[in-house]
Length: 224
Image 1 (cartoon, rainbow, N blue to C red):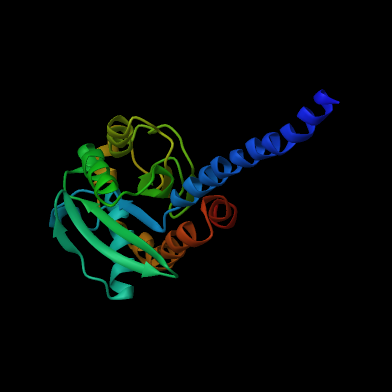
Image 2 (tube, rainbow, N blue to C red; image 1 turned 180 degrees about the vertical axis):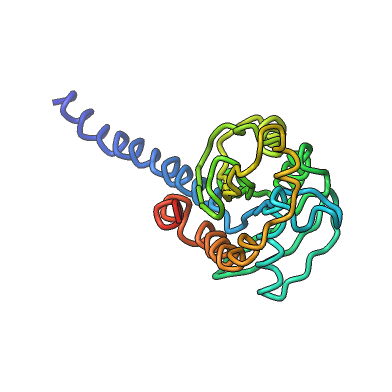
């Protein structure tokens, strides 16, 4: 009888202990919610200077310039680059053009990522790619630098390859030994004529990355 009474009165205590676990679970969920960010850092890779404005290697700058001009958003000179703030559907996109030259791009990416408290999964880097035909789109959640000095430096500075990159094909129509001249050369007439449509598509991709997520963006736009 005594044991039965002890068991009877010990039950609420066990239930109370079980209930005490619940706040920890909710707290964990709450912390996960806090990690969700509506801020995105969109980095266009390129080289500063008027001589590089219309070169193939500067497609990252060109994409951001196109979007900013279309939306009437000014770029401001800031630490380590030029920055424009674009708001769309409750998201804030920081459009960054590093002024560190291509092979030191990581310094600017890391600085603005930390300053605006933007998580790695919300980083989107736009770069040229010799291995893709002109205007071809390839979006990847991670990957190697592929020999690209800008991506190589970003990988080194961030200490990871796991950030989203948007590769814009510039093709490899150059003779042996002429790669540098080709990537630092201006678009030809045929490319110039097709660029506006490609730049418009690139703007859609940026908005999709922030609103639909990287997986949906990859499914919708890769290969176009």
